Length: 439
Image (cartoon, rainbow, N blue to C red):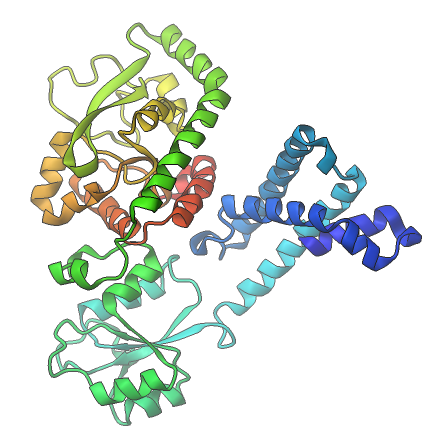
């Protein structure tokens, strides 16, 4: 990005300025351009593993990213005219940046599955956990992972491809050396007496990374595997932190961001309210009881997107993707997430945060808690307008869908930080533009 900007600046000034003076005089300009460009690429999902391995996606997202960069810079230069640079500089820097993104991504896609940069993983075990890793390897969630084989240490019926099972004919360190293994994943369900502890220690001290199944799957998929959760995982797993200072800072950012968004979106909210009123009689806003921090209930505010008598029988019903109860206006505002905007008031009241697990209705919380006892752990943090689960799994229209979202919510709670919140806010742009990108 910086190189593209300086190329544009050089085309503007040519040989009239010394090269080192050009670098020095436009240092901050290049920095602003680079941060805006990288932020736009990030917001469009080009630094997300699942959406960076298909060239067609890269092509579309890169073009939109550079378009977003131009819009953001135009607004920035309008607000702070002293930061403005010559248009000719941008008109050269943007196409050069686009070509650079295409070139780097093309090289990345060509090299990602080669031995040059692929992470070579050896799996200890051939059972159910090992089968999950084999399935992951062939999915879109796997980015640059190459499983070199499955070492049979259990002696049970294998659940993986027989051709990929490795018999222990040599020591584990020698096997790792011969196959150039970077990581070892312990995927046995019963560890006692199964693991070659001395060999694992030798591999660890030789520089081979070693992960247990839960940690490995969490890192690769961005969610916690419910099938392997035990009380010990909550006790010994790193994370689940967030002191008083971090919570205070997050609350301050929630208030500032909500006030800014409320002011900016007022015209859009007014137009939405008018459209709802014109389409059908009834209230513009929809109020509903939800469960929030520490399991306490609060009233959430949304734009009404369903018919007034959507639950005429008084029984809570899961909202489906193509729910017939949704109105014409409701379908549009749901797709663009406009129906969520009134929740800014919930954030200002302190019932919600800008980022966090989505709050559920008490009836559904009761059902989900019965299905999985650890469901209540998601109430350790405030619910949010957007969240980690919303980046990966948009619709939850059943108990199973709620449990799937729980996997992402537990990941968020464990890795909770202001940096992760910033990542989620930026990636929400991608989810709004590509709602089908989330499963």
